[in-house]
Image 1: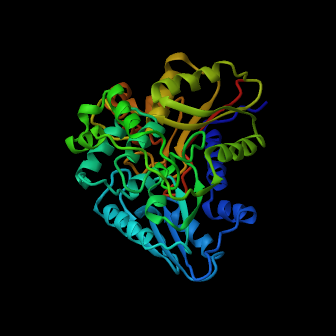
Image 2: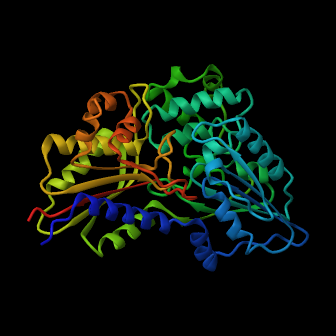
Image 3: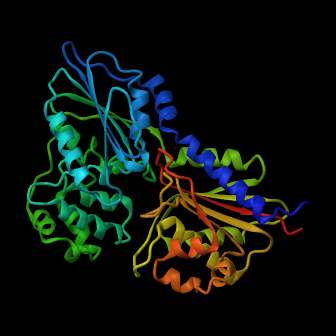
Length: 427
């Protein structure tokens, strides 16, 4: 059997990842779902209020506007990397992952639009990952600076996305069902592209059309038990200390899932099967990147090398910040896997890809990285120590030195992360 080179393995890993992204195409996913769940129409004399938030917002809105009938208004809020003009809609951009002043203004515009809704109107929400940071709408008593500080604490805490969004929901006017509260008494329908593992729709973009993940007290308890309470700004702690009853919803939304990490992982599997003996090892790769790297490496130890093999993973890991470097969860995961493979040795050629389906990994322009057996050596030849860079959370610099960054540009979608481990033969 022909031994696959690292170059061909790298190309194949990138192709498999591209198939995962294609399966999360927001326009196509929405179009298919509308065949069974068409856009609802407003009552007589009403109008449709279409609001799209998230990294896939422009593509979702463009498709939705081809199906809407009658009087309507359309507003999009997305990241600047994903901005595109959509005829018939107002397009706003704001900051991600750190909220900014533009997002604060966008949140106010959404609240104003929803607050003007009447009973005969129909609210149509188009929700995708990234929406939480893109439309900050702090509760009374919190400033944008407070929200930014909270977000920075959460992003560096190691908390999973569900617990992060639990806290965000109780500090926001739009999250945790805020669309419903402000849009009442109009009916609401949401089409959701999920970036949350397990597809808990309360957590996607912090659940603007869903009931909260937990109570006000649950959010406070989470902050205390995970040790981040005293890192939060005083205004956030003051609000969370209040005794606030759970919100009573005047209406409930119809929430419809149109795409997810699991769907993209299945597409990656079908692509990999054309060339490799393929296996989906996990569709819930979560938790700290160091633990995830160990889980991934263990999967390689049970693989046989009589034919090329593809081990696939989907999920969303977390990084606990220790240093002042720059990187993201996918880059750090890839570098950790490369380190484990160097220490324990994998026979034959191999490559490992970890990438964010949105094309952005943390505050960097990279989607992630593709590493191989030569990654650490290439870093060392530049005079740098991979372990020291990793300790400083400086995976972006390390992988830039080795030439292993995965650069896709903004993809216009977001369904969390995909990992591809390709093992060549050693015969």
